[in-house]
Structure formats: structure tokens, C-alpha cells
Length: 79
Ligand code: SF4
Ligand code: SF4
Image (cartoon, rainbow, N blue to C red):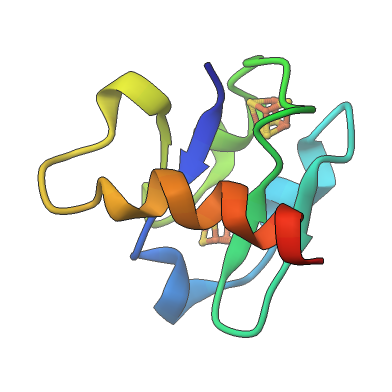
């Protein structure tokens, strides 16, 4: 399990989450930020600071946002 960044980040992208992550597993992509699911320790610190509520536990990602679970993982496979 890991936390996942979803579509609201695409318009916001201010990076508050990066500042608070204790394991430095959030990286900036072209359109949004992504969480590396293999490094995330599920602490929830990022979720608490995101101003647009873009971050969810993997099993709590809302309907219509499920593609972001794979998109977060894919970003770290390609970069
Ligand atoms: S805090 Fe939220 S909106 Fe800001 S970069 Fe992180 S996920 Fe995106
Ligand atoms: S839940 Fe914690 S470890 Fe995972 S990305 Fe957010 S701040 Fe980093």
C-alpha cells in the first residue's frame, strides 16, 4: 500500500507535500507530482498538507481517479 497523488495536483502543483515527506519519495513530473509506491511508508504527512486534497491512500482513491494509482508507479519505472 502507498499514498497516491491524483488529478487535483495537475492545476496546483505547489510542492508542499515534497517538503514534509520523511523518505523523500515525492518527485515532480511535467504535469504533476508523483509518489514512489515502493518507497512510501504510509505516514500520511503529505496528505495532511496538500491544499487541494489530491493525495489518498491507495485503497481510498475516489471513483474516476483510479488510473492515477498506475500513473504514480509508472512515473518511477520510466524515470
Ligand atoms: S501538495 Fe498536493 S497539490 Fe501540492 S504538489 Fe503535493 S500533491 Fe500536488
Ligand atoms: S505518505 Fe509519507 S512517506 Fe508516503 S509520500 Fe506521503 S509523506 Fe511520503
